[in-house]
Amino acid sequence: MNTKYISTIRWKFIWAFVLSIMSGAVLLLGGYRLVNSLIYLNPAPPSALYSLILKWIINHIGSAPLMTAVGIASFLIFFFIYTRKIVSYLEEITSGIQQITKLDESHRIEVRTADELGVLAENINIMSERLQRSLLEERKAVESKNELITGVSHDLRTPLTSVLGFLEYIEQDRCREETEIRYYVGIAYQKTLVLRKLIDDLFEYTRVNSSRLPLVLERLDLKAFMRQLAEESVPALARAGMTYELYDDTESLWIEAAPYELVRAYENLIANAIRYGKDGKRLEIGLSREGDAALVRISNFGEMIAEGDLPHIFERFYRAERSRSQITGGSGLGLAIAKGIVERHHGEITARSTRSRTDFITRFPVSS
Image (cartoon, rainbow, N blue to C red):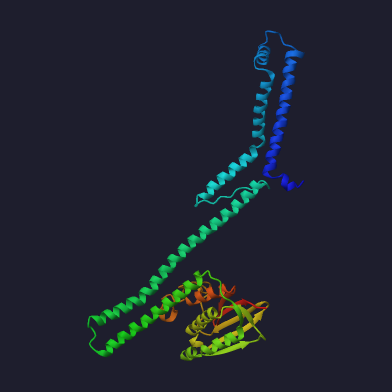
């Protein structure tokens, strides 16, 4: 017979039942011999109290009903004794469940057996851990939402206040010349463009990070993809007085990706390189392969990112500029969007910066 099957709760109760019957039978047999010895084999003096009581019970109740009552009572007592550990463990599990239902408490039940109760305790512990993780993730989500609202409020309020101020100035007819009106309207228009860019980036960030729909992946030639994207970036580079160089030391570089999603990620990385790398006058794109990973490096040669800022640059609304300038710092969402898109492709994005250059490196699994 399988040892694992014997160790189940069902068999433990069967063994307790059998042992209770056997223990009760032994008790009855011992009691019968003791009474027989006291009354018949070694009779006590007629005046002995216990002798009178035993004889009265036997004569008026009968030995059979007496043995039946004693047998039932002894069976129950022995059954309680033999199942005490099982019942005690079950009560411990029940108490643990009650502790877990108190959402602010973390509790783990000790797994002491290999039977169903042990399996139940282990499953309850797994459930408790998952519940705690879910609660922690929920708290983080609430904190993240509050931080997002705070960041959005701050970034929307600054340009909106400027727009309202200039429009109010014009509406109150405080401008005396058309050129002055055009000047203020131009500033208000630029601030409105900033607002639209922020709202678009915020929408994109929310879509990338909250979407649970799987990406529709296709086999993508990363070399051709980056060459085309670099060519499409030439007008923006020209406006910034920059050129680009592409370095490719691979024969082929294929990955599984959603092209339209990946375009947005690299457009943000290139836009970031243009914004901060104007002084370097050039953008560098490097393609390489390391083992089973396809690497794309976007490099600019502008100002160094401070070591203290580097670990945080992929966080939303984080800008290295303490002034949080919308003009030089963008919306603060571009790198966060890029990171979200790369990670949805099971890739990785990192950054490094020295006094001479700043590199943003993405890694994707190579498609076989």
